[in-house]
Length: 294
Image 1: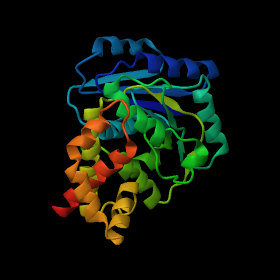
Image 2: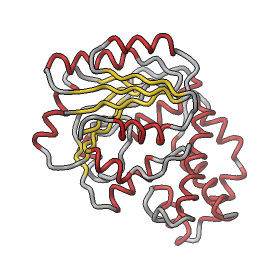
Image 3: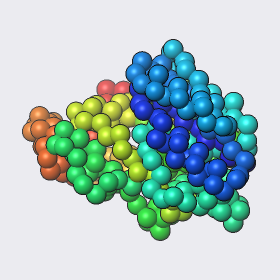
């Protein structure tokens, strides 16, 4: 009934696969688990052990094609019509994680079901604090709150019909930040999204410097999509903030403020108590700068 699809890159996958396999085995539902190594060079020997589990397909690829392209390969190879995408660095929060998704398929007509994301309560070390704070404040939301913006989904924990996924996942390059484009595709093509309370715990936190770099790479992707006419210019909160500041004629002031204190903002964001308002200003400054030179 469901294909569990996990792209992985240099991450230990045994705990996640074992837990999902255990839950499926207990409810005796038809399933397969596909894990594809996307050019990994670490943990290969350990991860190979998952092949001993029934209904698990494990493949190693030498080339790093990126998560989006690997997901597309997984989807095309999948045996079932429902696909559950999980990132390698997550674990189900609850022991009825799989049963909850199976029930959701029975009672919902929506072709997309998003279970949500959560984070551990204890703060990580200082070097990873920004990613943790951002996740807790911006990503870990109850279904009632997510339904206010239903097309904002995160593909770390996503159940979707195979046909719908392949129709929406049309960019296969090694870009960062393509969840936004995928969300936009769902909206553009008119697919409904059900939001339920069935979270995974996101464990693999980047350090703050890497997260800042990835955030800017996501903006590069966004602007590229805008310029190619593949994304509306008011779909994301960043785009809406830019247009609002521009309309109020305070965009230049925000840009100058962000530029003048850029290094101080970076230091603050890499501190033990990062301020997400400064993070928003940091991203807005970069977006304005890139659009000015586009």
